Length: 146
Image (cartoon, rainbow, N blue to C red; front, side, top):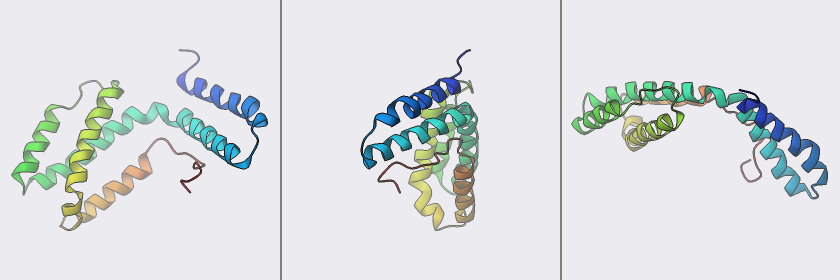
């Protein structure tokens, strides 16, 4: 497919850099525009890796949830429900986003108790690995995010 999604995002970034940026007056609008340009660059570079990241994140999070389920019947039921809802098609990014949000929601509910128990090191390692693997990295933050 031409142009690819990455090429389209890069093209939009070039338009903003070459056409819009020279016409922007004021430091704040210029700073916002620079943040948008950086976000487009990050999306262009990482969009194709999102589905793989979602599948990896779900698999890793589910391993952590399964460990938590060993001592908690309610968590075990939630894990079974999540396993049954796992999308079949890795290319269905929307389905994986929805599923990953559900899996992450269960983890978010359990995180305070996990952080206080024997799974705390695994939780911390998972969260670090997740941050390291996230495929979209914006080089410049928007104003107010610094």
